[in-house]
Amino acid sequence: MSGAEDPPARAAQQAGSVVAIASFGMRLPTLQDCGARYGVFFATYLYQGLVAGFSLTALANHLAAQGVSSAEVGVHFAIAGLPWTVQPILWGPLVDRASGFAMGRRRAWSVLAILGCHAALAGLLLVPDARALGALGGVFLVHSTFAALLDTACDRMVMDHVPPGELGRMSACTRAGFVAGTSLGAGLFGWLLAAYGFGFSTACLLATAILASLPILLVREAPGDALLSPARRPSAGGGRKVPFARFLRRLALGLRRPNALRLVALCFSVDGALALFELPFSVDLVQAQGWDAAELSRLQAGLAFAGGTLGALGIGLWCDRAGPLPALRTLFAASAAALFATACLIAGGFAASAGPLILGFTNVLPGLLIVALVPALMQASRGRAGAATQFEVFMAVMNLGSVAGGAASGVLAPVLPLSGVALLAGLVLVGAAALVRRPDLILPRQRPGDARSL
Picture 1: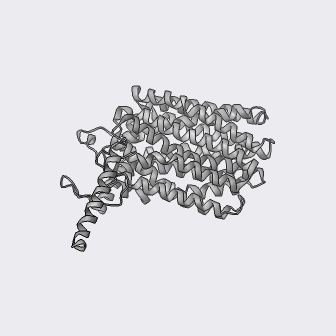
Picture 2: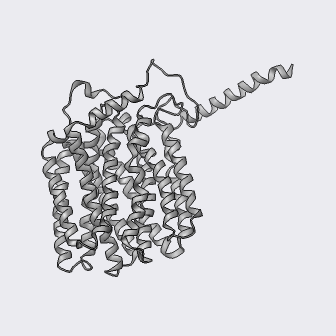
Picture 3: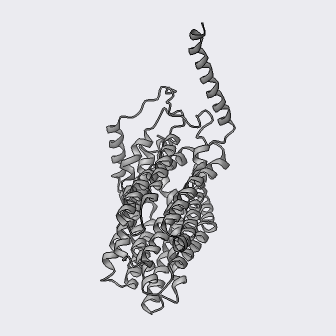
């Protein structure tokens, strides 16, 4: 008799566990709560910034101090950035067409991505030394693959849950999170690498990354979602997933529009021009001007933090009130003027003494561009087939431009002086400012059906 009662008892026990977990989950916030939205997206981009500050600033400066050339450092950047250039192909359709997860339509992918990111970072503990560039590149390649999935899922959750009138502030929030993480990562790990070495620094990176990722693991997408569950739920409302081939055709039609192609060119050229100058200038300050690598990391962290927190908030509020394009026009023009002034200072032989001023020119103003650019890109993508995928195409093109600029900087270094590189980057931004003056050239016409989300 007891044996006959075992299966129902076990079922009741499992049901009781599920109810207990669900009741615990009901006390947790969701993305429908305004404060929770800002908190979880800030923390997620804080996590991404921590890793970027470690790898792209602190570690790059540490390698430069050890005599590694800018070309080799550029290759390290290029390897780490590859998954971001193919992000839409890797993850966009998967996240756009996601459905049926008990954890939430998009959040299931973000949790999977976080776990993959942590597993990849744990691989740093097996790398013997910072000069093992091949092993480093492999670890950050795997990490970037999962980080790109996390970014795609978060971008789609922003589109799903953030009202259009808050996109500027949300862009400022995510930028502030990323900049705070980058600043902390660059400053803290620049010091740790110099003082305690590579092994201890990577262990600290893994610990801080796990702490920063806790909100995305604890905040649910909607009230009825499970906190953590691999299960799927029955589809509600009779929704039917768009076939993959039809999805790709709709996406291709949207991206072939002339305004979308111009926006793609804008994203690539702006990030490419900025990366073309920023990397060789940092290497030049350490190797030619005698700057200390840890000091450079701290200064870059402080400048980025100042521009990416209060500055980002101001730009975000401006975008929500006046629209993103007026802010973009002003920032493009100001960044171009800053680069022209930088070219004059370097050509006049003031690169060492004016280094902090030049870093301020080239880190603060361009860093604010993304705050105004993200709402414009979401406005161009929202309500169209594969909204997240189309948005990620724009962002991937920006990352591709950054990777291409970083790789090309090593090739151009022997043939084009830094002043010439700054002048070239400034001219690109002048062209960007001119293009943004014509919204009809880069933004689609709004039709009644465009308000409908996919």
